[in-house]
Length: 227
Image (tube, rainbow, N blue to C red):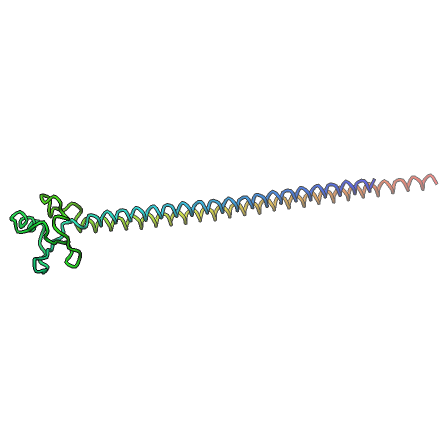
């Protein structure tokens, strides 16, 4: 009978050990899945940030290109090269237009809004002379303002992306900490249950041993009395 109880106790211990091993295996699998999910989320976040950064840079470049296109015909002063090749100016657009209307300028007059830049024929810049020297793009002040706004917008977007990335990082850390605490609590609970089970089995074994000893003592006493 005692041997049977020992076998039962061993079976219970084996079952308890198997249960604990299964719990640990599930926890390890959950941990691997969590790490894999975090890595995938981090990769996706980085891809999104790269796409957003590239889009912001492309938009800024497009705005810069648009500003450069309008630079040739702004409200900046003009210069022209006289027949001797001397650079004259600067002159306002209104003044240059008055001279054109008065017949002082011909279509082949070399003009530019940059003294040290490229001079091109008046008719090449203004195919329609009725629109000559009229700004078709933003002024230098407006262009500078637009460029400053574009830079500020790109900087604000970059800062926002950094703040969002930092917020995601903190959230992931808090999540990982909470999961670690939950795992620790689960392990502590499993350990407590295992200890309780071991104590219960030990108590059962002690009570059984006492019962067997008592039964043996009674049997011996009865045998002695009969003798």
